[in-house]
Image (cartoon, rainbow, N blue to C red; front, side, top):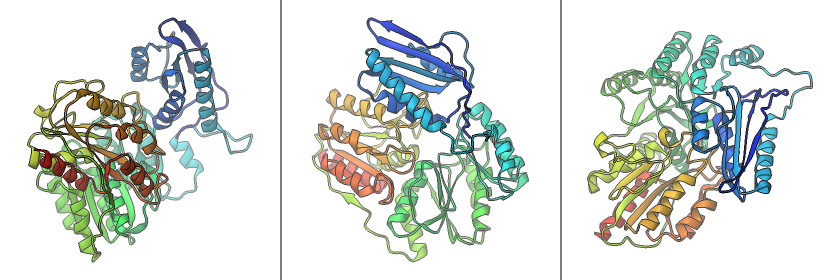
Length: 511
């Protein structure tokens, strides 16, 4: 829904020399909007230049202004969320100029119009749908700051269209109202905070290139849906649709509104022969309601809901393959190198929250309590600032994709910097460990994660195990990434459950 316009007001930039901190540039630009993921990619790319020490290209929301101030890059005067903040700090004028040129080039590429000279871009979802063909299959995608997302999504619902709300930061009561309105209108709301979907073969958000097939997914988990769809692809079985519903949908507050609607939609879809429900543990009352609804559908529904009793997404996929009469393949893997030192502990550094939960559920049966920023029980969250302090000793799993660690920075599937810092910190700590990582491929993710990972993993003083989620058809190519990571000494598995069990085997051999 990003619609930059040709005419822009630009505030006077401040380029300030600083003896200890290099030089800085801070400006505000009006009339330009891009979604947060795109701007995070712009920030990452501009910040990768030699001599560039900090970059923040973001809409000037209060949260982003607070982040800019903490970086010493606050703009002068008043700013509004409709303005684009461009803030850069660099070692010298040459590095600063190069970084600003990179920002401008990225924005110019984003803003380039392919329409006629007289075309006026639409400014709202409602206006865009008015211009679109009167086809109920047209899907709206909303990716604006959270406070504005529901208004735009309601435009789509009022026009009789389903909508994917990529935005996060939407109050839960607004989510409930939006989904209730969608039910009355007979359409589906995916999200808020829906990062992964595939609708009629079209990938939206973070999604992998998977073959079409008879299995429909309803997912309250983005990386969980990616893991399941990639394993199905590896088994030669494709998906009809992947309908993300947002991570809160199965909470007591939301009551599974979108999940129930998505199940009904797939039940009515002639291309869908089986349905798999993927989620972290739901609220018990919601789980009961969803199970009752699923039992009344003509299309068989199998659960891949994580819990202490069912901690394994791969096992759920294998059971579904059995339902379809498809042999379970040998899931792709690559052998690793190294053995764990005596007394080694598990360190899981994850970008996917559901994959982190799966690892903790599997590990807890062997290791006992595992501490985390997203713990299985609240008391297992150490009093640490997980954004800067990774010094918790013992068995620890960190979800670097948690909202608290992605404020003002790209998701770790896009920008691995924070997680790489944690790996370096673990190596410097001297604590014996087995390091367990996920690397998630596909649209929207890092175009070549092995480039940054291989140099770090090659020198790691501990064994590394990688859950590599992706397909051969992904832009990054599963086997190419697996070979590069294995060349750095890592053991690589297509299944996160298999990767976790391998890490546990290494720990058991060292005890």
